Image 1: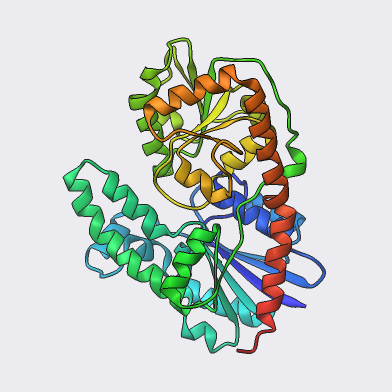
Image 2: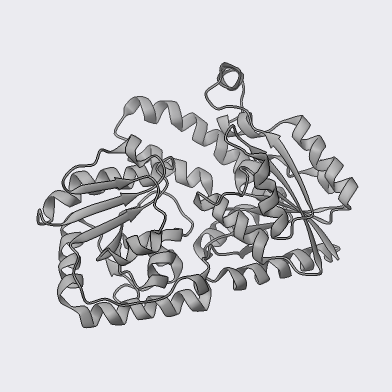
Length: 396
């Protein structure tokens, strides 16, 4: 039996964001009779106690919560102002939380502590190593690179100046975690290579995935004159991408083409109009995919694997967007997705989607096959289970 403690930066239920969805499904699909899983999670003001029962249903043995500091509080901001730490360390590092980890290790005889995302990785180090546990840093992105890209893309000198020093601090902190962890996990091969270069240690890939069996593929020859963008708009790469698409790309399309945008806080970012339909929540997201001629993906910032790409590919909705990020899935241009790296290419590739249905069917079927082969939570969960078991038995 391997006893694992999973530490998360936000409670993994409900799975309303990419990070929470990843944590929830890793929990759900990684367990068997040889794994006993405990969860320690930061929570925020919206946390509901009844959510804990949802984790118990999928096999979690023990749940502990800890309220995270507020970002926009006088305490947090003033403390960070006079500190050499990044704002993320100010938010997430707390000696009381470290003591909680130690207590859980002792109480549940933990073998492996898996810190999911770099925001929780501040606790990786010698104190836990002395307790005889293995420490894993699971990355959803290489976070400092995400913020570096964001700063570089900003046109505001004030924003560049104020954020750059925070990013530099965070880079040093994140690199320390990677070096001190017994093992790092990445979501793509490219990010794994980057982490190996920093840590000088092994880094394995635990992909993002979806519940493939729940998403039925279908192909339609009908044109609906509707593009789809899905994302969490409290996440800056999505906000930046949507802003680009609306300002630079959408005006180039025929005025009969609509854009449907779905996601948390979207109404705080843009307003609906005759061409743009905004929805913060829908009961049936699958139908929204089916009602779109393509999922547009104009995201340049950040790493990892976008869940919406995987969902669209599984369902048979063509994916149209920047090739650099989509290629992280292993998808190939003109084989599993349609490449568009400029505004004009978005328009020309969309015309191709509307007029060459034979090509669309071939590409979408290829994309579905890729998802079945590589991106089911069942397969990813088994891989993580194997890593936990193996590292707990590693005496080095």
